[in-house]
Length: 277
Image 1 (tube, helix red, strand yellow):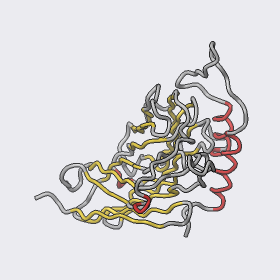
Image 2: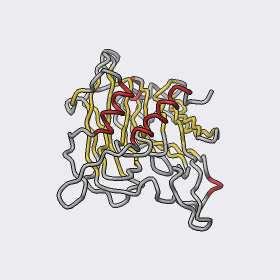
Image 3: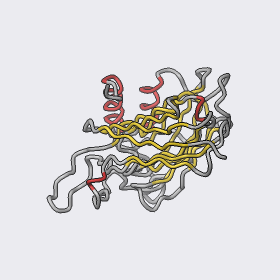
């Protein structure tokens, strides 16, 4: 079954249309500016579409997003999400959203999480199309919403042409684990999918025509058959999407990623892990 339901597709399409509505403010000198914790007209509309009447609370005691104030390259902006609580059954992060207010497709990532990740910290790289807030909203197991944001100054992230040196590798999925596997301990890992993540806004310099959109839609991670997280994604994630994450192994097993893209391509990667001697 395709990971993006018709309802979610309609929601994302609606959010993309809302984000394109004009609502920019300028600082003296004509350059956009804002504080990190400021709102925006785009965010007001996106928040209402995602959460209805529920209002995420400022939550740096729960979650923090780390991103550069100025990014040299808008098509690859490093972003890290850090949570201040461990993933315990009695209280944990069960879902999170990463939003870029002014992007053509503002909801970059939606993740469904389990306690198997141990600590719900993630790193990735995003496309940021113009000066914009990058936000994370975390929903805890008690239903509460917590948010943090950073204002990032960069542009051109959705129109920068991707690297096409190895089109035959599209879909190759690589998993890595840092250090030795130690059962019942937090283990850092990352997954990378070789993919152009075309946005539909990139111009082919040879044909002078727009490159059709083609991007990773979902990455599902499991270990020893137990779900770690499901990530729904869009083209606001950089080419060759990478997620750095944690998991808690309970013994030897297979770390596995199942990937789908917007053209119904299906890919997978696996890494067999054994306990440290």
